[in-house]
Length: 229
Ligand SMILES: [Fe+2]
Ligand SMILES: [Fe+2]
Image 1 (cartoon, rainbow, N blue to C red):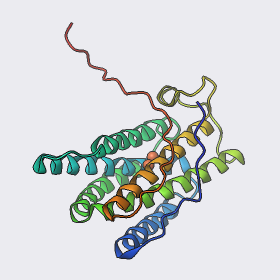
Image 2: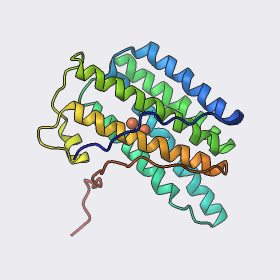
Image 3: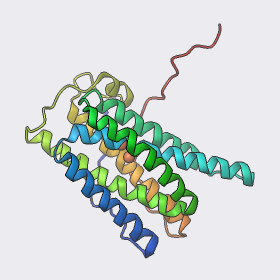
Image 4: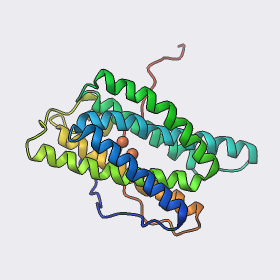
């Protein structure tokens, strides 16, 4: 499996106050991440993927509850958002095989999860449109960060180690796949999330949805428990 081509030029130009808030918030977080991690891309990926896996589950939960209350169809949003959350968690499980977080980074993950979950939940209740726009902008930044990571590997500053077994299984990569192949498919996932979330925000703002980057194929995760024979 080779990663689908990623259009690096996609950017949603902020329109109106809600978009500008989402964009400004994303740029502030980007500055914090750049300051904290600098070029430690493996560590950066681990910590940020623990955050990236939150919005999909929040959006899925709140849309699920809304559909129950209104007794209406979700037009496929809930499954899409749950798949996004699972996919981000698999990014985390992949990068944890590549780099090991420091004790301080683990503390940051725990502290940030509380704050980010509650803030994002609150934001989604107040404005689902802004919440999806925030994720769209986060994902634009993720595409940029993984492009930088690829350059680090290509220029020999990060070793191009063998791909973790889990990643080879999940994305159906070749036996001799490397970290570079993994970062490429992860970046393609992020481009897909970017377009899906900007599309959801556009739909809520009654704007045209735009094209969605293809999602690399993933295996269906199987439970490890067994039903009684
Ligand atoms: Fe991710
Ligand atoms: Fe993502």
